[in-house]
Length: 290
Image (cartoon, rainbow, N blue to C red; front, side, top):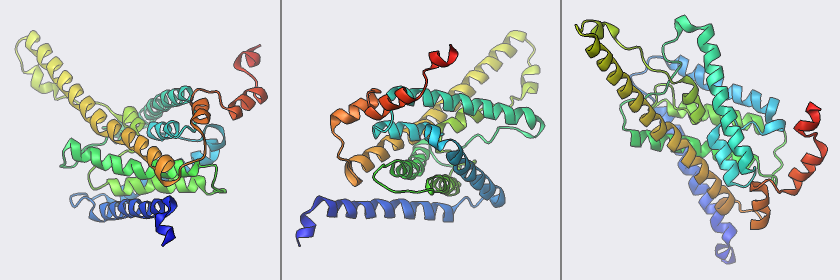
């Protein structure tokens, strides 16, 4: 009976509870799927393409940057006090720019076969429901990544594979509500979003050029407003909030660390001893230029 009085006991029970929620949510979401979707083979291909790409890149650049490749993951790790705020800001900027460039390359190569670069759309659900789906999908992803970055664990060489499987799982489970199976990474929609072609023939029928310009302008503004509102409400708010919640759950409830507040503050503000050693061993940018 003494075991029931310990915090570690209830932490383990909570871990089982949370794990079961995510397990059933992912499994049933994939099982339900989208009854109107006739491209199941394509969905599986896309899910494994994203998952294998993440696993490969995690092996390639994981030892250099951590291979976050997702602002939600970066936000989760900065919430966990694993990286500095400055590094997180530059990582997010690099991720968004990389998403835009990568999408531009694909569009340049396959422009004649591309309509929307796989922009996510909600399949008959409200933005609030889409937010909830993105939140749950990202929650399991960031929980996985935060656990993989826990220095108290001996992961070995399986971290990239675990990261890739987590991404694949999210895409397969997300097919129930998203036309492109959800994103979990806000940068994916930053890179791939584009406006659907307008039916200009409708406007050419207008007799007055001012009416044409005004109608076209209002249509563009409406489309941009709707798209931006949906993207930030679902594909940014969902994953980013899940990143914070996952980090708080892991670091302060499931597996709290012994690091003091002072030590965590040093990491956030780039004052950590390990970062000081890194600066001593690595040449500064101005030294390289000289």
